[in-house]
Image 1: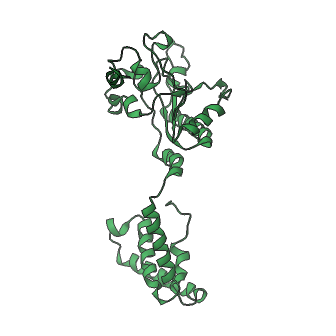
Image 2: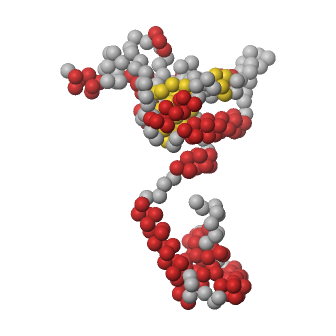
Image 3: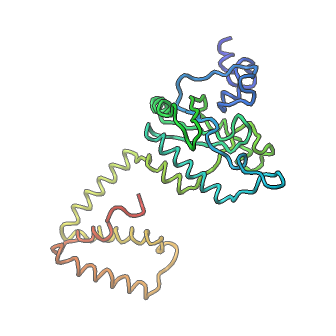
Length: 282
């Protein structure tokens, strides 16, 4: 019996616990729901209820009583400012794995912000830090959420642009952000595997050994190859003209002559030309 109850927990077959609250952390029936809403006392995921002011809902009415049209580019720009504000605030308490904002307009889901942290301790710190706080003049309502798998909570038809329920769908319609913003925010958590770190360290030691004497030519060739890739991968996609190749060779020769006296004739002088840190590649 216990195994059967565990197998149906949070599903439609469960007549005791609300499956929508279990999957989505929200239920359209609210406190009037005939099934139980088991509110977690600790979780990796925190819910900020109705925090995002969806312009579809808040747009002012025109003279004809119909909500005025809003510019999509302005809406997206304002949304990404909001998204970044929330991320930077909660990221002070720990690593953020997911930050999702609902684009639904039903009362129980409109503007809901779900933040999943790497661990429960970070979520608890963030929840405590937001108590009694305001955003844009409105109080922040923060609570733990049972949602941990957003794949189960998200409307698959919405992702395929086939959901016919619109903003009143009971599954999450997640508002997207640009790739650039996602990279800027979540890119700080990018990790290298131990094997890749070791390979990188070994390669760095080999380059330093070859840079002090006559063996530095191989390092220059590698750096030239990387420079060509930074120039847009022209070697692979587009053949250079003879004039371009001659100009590039002349430039290399000038750099070689200019750096040779300072570098004592060794190949290490090229590290400053092609190996300088802080470029566009992290």
